[in-house]
Image (cartoon, rainbow, N blue to C red; front, side, top):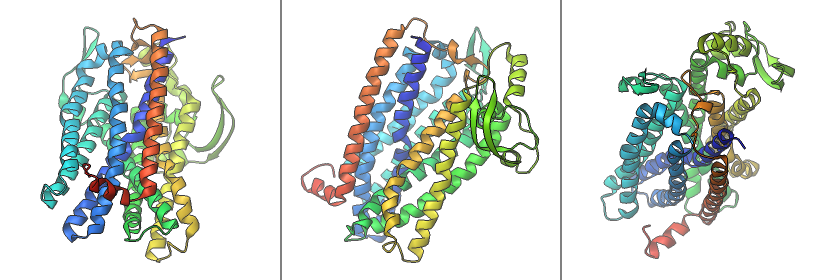
Length: 456
């Protein structure tokens, strides 16, 4: 057993588990804040019921997300101590700010929101929920500032074998942050939108909507989801163009582009032979990758083999090619749902404008099965982000094999890997059970909880 392989599996599993909850937390906090703001403005009690219902589901997801996130930071000291030693002066700063500023802002105001019903003025209570949404968004921003340094190091100097921060402002203005953060934010909006859409469609299909809670939620989520999914695509396009400049190997791996081509084709499907660095079979769209990269039908896109030779000149002998098959299919697992979701949202909005939602029962029955689409895209996107950077843990500065803790035996890593996987699986099962339970029962569950004396 190789401790490096086990440590990588452990971090990958715990990160993907955690990132199941993060986008929904960010996106649903904004939805709940919007609903409560409408309630304050209109005084319509239906919007109060909507706020409490979706707020209940938000709280369930938030609680499990916090638990799964705690383990990630401990792994930097346990499994990745050499990484922490090398880059801790830089990486630790945004992580500390995230915990001390963003997370405490979010959690403090969330507590006020939970226990502030009928105690705070309505407008103040709605403002508290906006602070929760702001805190969750800022939390993501600081984490992405830390991650962006791994993707595109800036504002540092190498001293005594360590990377030390020389310019905090450079971390904040890192160009990678400002293509990555909007992508995550709009992905979160899309995740929450399809979560609300799927649950609302479930109740509408069963005509379980006496006061219009789910029809109104459905309408709002369609607009929210269409805006989010379209903006995800536009920002993703900018992110891909930045990747061509900052991490050309990642883009080449995502397209299984072995040789530099001008114009470069976009691969629809490829059967990849990584050992011989060639495609066994491939279907391409001519010039489409050049169009994606430069907004025109010509322009050279570097291939894997040329980039490998360039990196050998820059960094010395070694294999600088990431796992191409994983990168290639992760990109498609992200891209395909990204195409489907705006189409579903646009069609749903068309039905609403035509007042034909209830006449299109098949569409309502389909939408609950669309809830996993943004989760698939989110997870695949992170896999591409991290796997496509390999063999670097900090691009151009530190290889992943250099970052693992030398004193932690493989057996210990394996034990913690299995333990975390089982525990996280149980937590995810509990989260899915609670979300499904309260989602099926509808807003009456929240009213019953309030009458029984809970925080709601």
